[in-house]
Length: 99
Image (tube, rainbow, N blue to C red; front, side):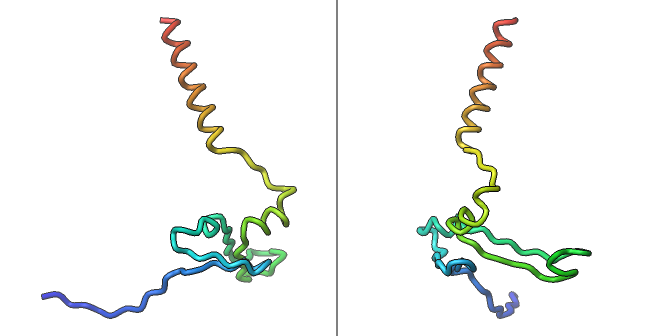
């Protein structure tokens, strides 16, 4: 025998930027949705936001760049992976020549 319980579930269908209002549909075809940044935390002791204050924001890539672009550190992950892989291959070749 199987016993079932009916439950209600919610599914994320869209993200809306809290800065500019841009809406992005979460359906696998809208790549903008994957570029949204969501912050969600509780302020700690002596936090500028207030002790135990819930802070959250959903922000699109455009507003993130506009608001924080000057301070964001960026690297090209694909380029870093290529250089790491290439460096590992060169190291292996050097080691094989030493043998």
